[in-house]
Amino acid sequence: MASLKGPGAPQKHDGSDLRIAIVHARWNTTMIDALVSGAKKTMLAAGVKEENIVIESVPGSYELPMAVQRVYAASQIQSTASTVAGGMGSLASGIGDLLGGSNSTTDLQGSLQPGPPETEKKESQASRHVFDAIIAIGVLIKGETMHFEYIADAVSHGLMRVQLDSGVPVIFGLLTVLNEAQGLARAGLEGGSGKEATGHNHGEDWGNAAVELGVKRRGWS
Ligand code: DLZ
Image 1 (tube, rainbow, N blue to C red):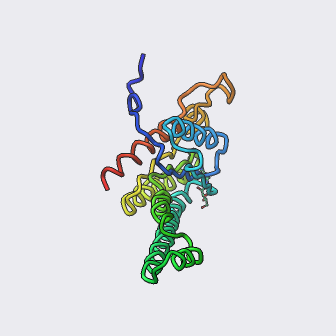
Image 2 (image 1 turned 90 degrees about the vertical axis):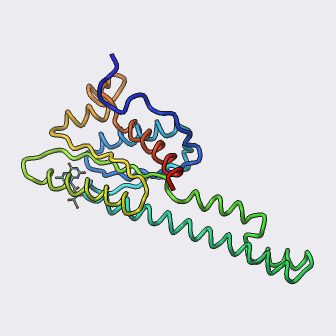
Image 3 (image 1 turned 60 degrees about the vertical axis):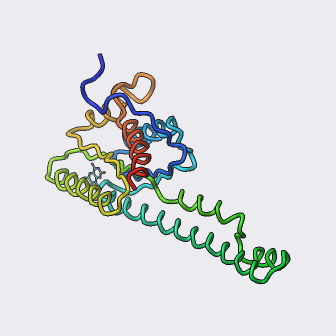
């Protein structure tokens, strides 16, 4: 019987033009590795190109909000730099036109790469530098102190703040579990890590959510 829980059957979205980052903590590595693989699996199935999935790690979940914020900001800076490079190509061709003659144009283009035919290509590449969505993945396991509550609260609020402040969808891949068994089940590792493994890998849902939000966000911009 179909589960009552969960987002229902995954919607179909074409992820072939998306660029998505996964930022993950390294605490509880076995579960983290499975969750990251699950997210990658569904993104690749939706058409996201392997080279457009960028993975960054931080020590623990507490570091996730800052890392997500900086990874996104860096992608914006990269994009601006590429656009400026493309603009220099246009400038070079414009000067070449003013000087007249195909030789001058060619010379200027040669010295100020990229030249005019490259400009459009550069700009479309530039827009692809910016991440369309970022998945933040961490596994917090409750211990004997209040540590878990403080970190879970801070990270949840931090990730929400980053996504609302920046406008990039941040997929909430933070498991906040009471014990290791709960974490293993949610990473699809109940009963072991081989073929005998059962449980639902939540990373797969996060991959689908990233593609859906990445596509929809372009329509909302
Ligand atoms: C310190 C700590 C503890 C006790 N437990 C976890 C955990 O279950 N999951 C997790 O992702 N990180 C844990 N951390 C590390 C903190 O998130 C953080 O990396 C450190 O406090 C350094 O800022």
